[in-house]
Image 1 (cartoon, helix red, strand yellow):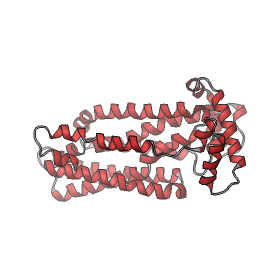
Image 2 (image 1 turned 90 degrees about the vertical axis):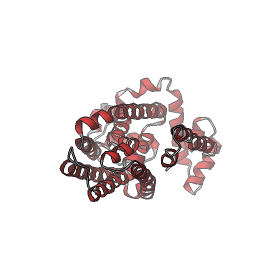
Image 3 (image 1 turned 120 degrees about the vertical axis):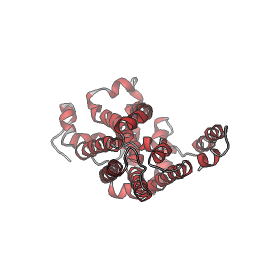
Image 4 (image 1 turned 180 degrees about the vertical axis):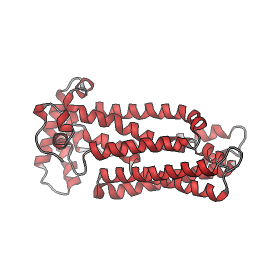
Length: 319
């Protein structure tokens, strides 16, 4: 909606549009001062008593001795690690490192950033006017924000795997339908009819909804909860770096890919969504309700990752 308003202010409206991005950035900066500390962070900095009070508030009980001691032990181990990036490359951290690379990479390869970045271009290509294309892109952005509420409500009830897999299936279906409509009904010398254009917008919005409740938030959540404290900072750094790297690559390549693939661009991303859905089904254990101090046990019991871990790290049980 900002772009729709500022594009009327020619020729300098685009500068105002970019400058207004400073407002949410300011809100985020101010909000950072209001964020509460986590028990893990407090314990790691030696504020054990304050960490206990926060943990008691979170759990709703004063019976937190065992969990607090686990945090203290994990914190002592984390502080003993002098080179976390070197440590994260060790074999016992291989599952977490794979997830730290693959989850943000797959998140971008859904094609969501391409749709959000270039929504006006896509909708104009499909026959929408300039103003209508801006409205449509605002619609997809609003849908993305609202769909994250689904994830907030269901992630701790259904689990991470269920949301990732169901969201992946819905994204594949939506991208395949959009590609089929554009391929069959959108010729080189004719615009897409109004009816088909509306159908395409609907399925793009359904794609955005599926992303919003699954890979959108969980692409960040899962990497943040699988690393032990001693490698957590390094793991999160890898996650952010991979996300930004693939965001840059796809953003730079998308328009050229759109010209080359045409309607096939949606099949390209659908293929990646299929790969990542299979990846989650076979290689990602359910992390719902698993404390960070016990996360390493999850990999030791997984049917595949226990084969990758060193013998001393694995056991004979499976998930």
